[in-house]
Length: 141
Ligand code: ZN
Picture 1: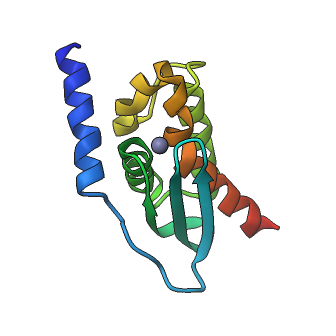
Picture 2: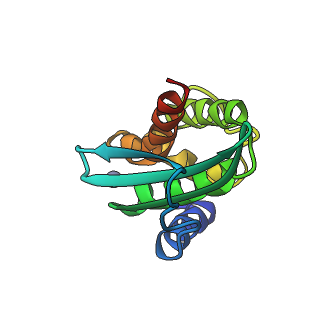
C-alpha cells in the first residue's frame, strides 16, 4: 500500500463521514432513485435545473463508503455545469472506473481511480452517475 493509496482512502472516508450536498430538494426539483443490489447501496438524487444548468444538487442515501463518497464527489463535480457537460463528465468517470481511459480532467474524482481494480466495487462507484443519467433521461422524456 503506497502513501498515495492511503491518502486517497482517507479522502474517500472524509467524503463518507462528511458528505457534501447531503439532503433533499423540494419539488419541482427533479428526482431519481438508484439502487445497487449487489452491495445494498441506495441513492436518491435531487437536481434543480435552471435553463440548462444544474443550479443545485443534493442526495440522500445509505450504503458503503465508496457509493456514498462517490455520490458526494459527484455532486461537487456537477454543480453549476450544464446538462451536457455533466453527461460528458459521467462518461469520462465511467471510462476511468472501467479502466478504459486515463483519469484526465476529473479533478478530485481521480481519487476513485483505484476502484477500477476492484471489480466488485465498480457498481458502488458508478451508482451516483448512473442515477444522474437516469434523472436526465427522465427529464428529457
Ligand atoms: Zn457499495
